Image (cartoon, rainbow, N blue to C red; front, side, top):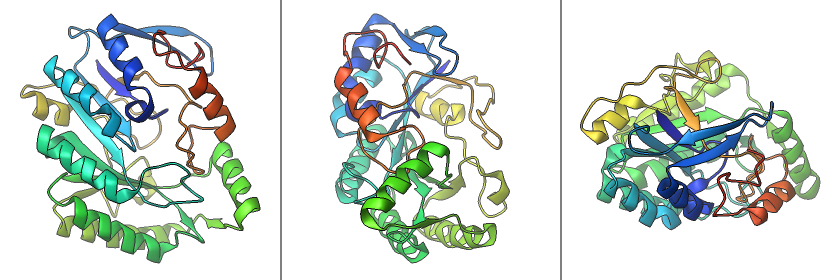
Amino acid sequence: MIISASYKTDIPAFYGTWFLKRLDAGVCRTRNPYGGQIYEVPLDPASVDGFVFWTRNAEPFLPVLREVRRRGYPFTVQYTITGYGRPLELSVPGPDKMVEIVRRLAEEFGPRAVVWRYDPILISSATPPSFHLRQFERLAVALAGATDEVTVSFAQFYRKTARNLAAVARKTGLSWDDPAPEQKRELLSSLAKTAALNGMRLTLCTQPGLTGVAPPARCIDGARLGDIAGSAVQAEEKGNRPGCLCHRSRDIGAYDTCPHGCSYCYAVSSQKAAGTRFRRHDPDGPFLADGNG
């Protein structure tokens, strides 16, 4: 079983102590946010084939990653670096610092251990296509040699996302757009060329309507974990939405728990809700957040 930690929140940035204590315990608990069912997820070596960590800031988690490796678990890190800044990203560390951390991860654990995510691509008055062309190139040059893949996707305006962006718009006058598919393809084509020039393959996360320009991503990737482990990881393809090629995994995070303050985030209904659940977090508890999954 592959463990995802976590596309619902940033465990490496904020919940490393809890994760390590759950690793010691050999088990954690999650609750289905829709049906309320409680699940017990084993974390012992016999049950876990590897971990996929999702983060915007792995610096606090470096000691934990060393311990994960010492215990013999293979892992990969899906590392988001966009550098949009305020008002879109209230408390995300600056991109130059995060590039430095990715390079440290690659040096210590190997470049196959890290996948850069430039995700989501938000087209807004603060981040027009010209911004993305410049920003992506700057980051790709800085990350060259530290990773062999960059995963991208265009922002999808779920109800939570639209509501949070509207709140930013009222305060700042920000406007945003969902470009036509041909405009997205044109931008993707330019980004893919930049990625290739810097030794990276550009992949597209769960947007099958655009995959003629870039191949689909597999964010939960048993083959990559197997490369790191030095032996095959048997994994069944089981995406969680149309176009998703991820291998089967169990996610141990919880929605409304990430205090990074990204206004386009699909996993946070409001910054207030995320802040409240973060403050209530019990690092000794079996659930990441107040038993509500």
